[in-house]
Image (cartoon, rainbow, N blue to C red; front, side, top):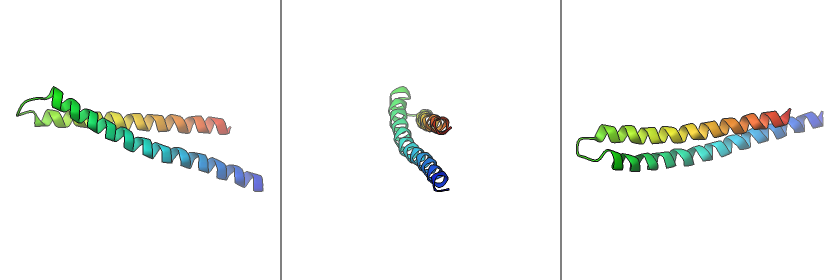
Length: 85
């Protein structure tokens, strides 16, 4: 019984570590997307009346960062689950 508890405990630790890394990666990717989107919006949407365009471009960059982090975390979890079998 001790071995089954240690296996479940280690698998829980693996998933927990992956989620922690995913959270950290998510914050970094979302921040990078926000900055890149903001810079791109300044370059692409120059002019006085393009406030909405700047917001859309910045939001797109932020969404790309969030999606990249989500995908990477999902792939890491799938690989960990395959390795546990």
